[in-house]
Amino acid sequence: MNWIRFVMLLSLAIWLGSLIFFPLIAQTAFTELPSSHLAGLVVRSSLIKLHWIGMVCGVVFLACSLACNQIAIGRTRPFAARHILILLMLALTAISQFAIIPRMDAIRNAAGEISLIASNNPMRQQFDSLHAWSARIEETVLVLGLLVLYSVARRLAPRT
Image (cartoon, rainbow, N blue to C red):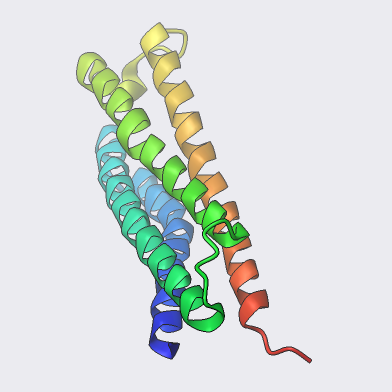
């Protein structure tokens, strides 16, 4: 059972670590690359990879957590708070991956380099709105993940 717990915690650590590291990648891309268009492409590609890491880690966490519960207490407890939070994280990640990013891509393909479009242009406003939603979703996933980490830490802490 210890190896199942290890894999469960490792999957959560990888997901949270990726979420924490991602803004640094984005900031570096926008400060070091010669154009905001190139930086946007790097950030987009990194975000897609981050989402796949998150989805795999979320499924692994759920499977291991359910297995740990089954072994330790004889039932899976699918509606435990940490499971609901992980499902919310997965849902938000999927929304960003499969709804928001494709819409941003469509605007980018139609409009070209976004930074060259006037801020009052409807396409630019729609892109900026989607970008804001994307950032909110990533922040929410991180906060939910920290709540899961706290929940797991409390559960695994020795009773005194």
